Length: 124
Length: 382
Picture 1 (cartoon, rainbow over the protein chains, first blue to last red):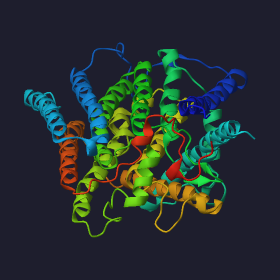
Picture 2 (cartoon, rainbow over the protein chains, first blue to last red):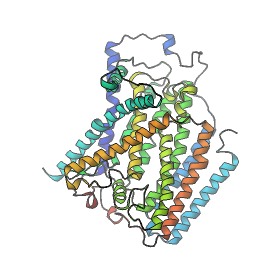
Picture 3 (tube, chains in turn brown, green):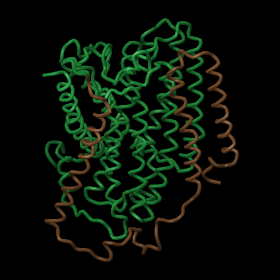
Picture 4 (cartoon, rainbow over the protein chains, first blue to last red):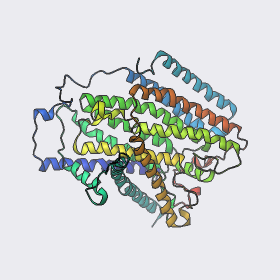
């Protein structure tokens, strides 16, 4: 009986976590015990090339970024559907090939529509 | 020792070995290599003070990062500010868990977790890397990191599509997602970039080389974009965004972002090598079942291929100028995405006309196993 390989992936993630956590911890300990704390107005200020910062940075931003994310979701799902199709391809009848072709053409039509609407155009 | 204990023991040994003996030195010396190679390209000397030819520079850098003040600015979201560097580092390393980095050594297969959905796992974990960058940018509560963060998200998801679609021709050909099977197929039939190597007289195999080359090019370029390397380094374009998403970071947290990028480069190269360049295989070198020395040579070949790819990464960085953001998005969505999609159907058509279908690898064995490589990968342990 052999253990499930996913078990080792979990162990691997644990070891990979050690990789950043130990240096972070060491740096924190060094600051905690050896470094003089000298806070100050300028040191705590937001970096903005020497200009005084105006307002919050966590604000609304260009909607184009969201549009890309939504189109991405659709086509990422498509890519996931293509993977089982690809794996089973050599054993599939012609009908299945045509079915996946129709599925892709539908999505491609969506992409062309979004393209025509200017969703993929960054500089309008 | 009973087989299960032996299996667990060797796997733990492999995990610790790959993370601390291979990845850690590779990441730190990738930084050194970047500085040395860039110096070579720009006709400078590069680091040459610490140790012979500056070879101890990574150690000096690590000490400096440790001793710099570990400063958390007052305006940041503290929890996410600390979380982001870890999130940038962990997925980059975790990807390597499913990659076969050698054949066998003393009968032990050189892969940590040989799962049957290897490639899907790679994509799932690699795409988590974007969280480190976007959370780092957002939690800094500063304008430059914020812009770097959203840019990076947009760029990474755009190129992830090309990345995912570019590998599908390979699975049309192989019919298996397991990465050890991908390597085995390439040993039997020639590397993916030279699919005719196993069958010189077959014109369809020669025809197949064209879409495979396109696949390889699209995949490699998408890896460049995913790892935020020039010519796609818009998220940290220093001439417009200062330092991009890590502007507000200092000390060890900055170092982790910095090293995370190199770790992502190494794992990205490992995936390219496994999928297209034959993995640990090199013509004329037998696998590890012929003696442990060959097992070691196979591991060496795998990492040598990665080093060559890293050199190309660095070479490109110091040769090509940066894209403009709208050009970058247009290139991803309008050019690479369509090419990758059409490419899939070219391969499907070629395979449909291929009179004797390509042999299917291991599909039958896939129902009941839990990914312990047996059969083709040499003597199984368990």
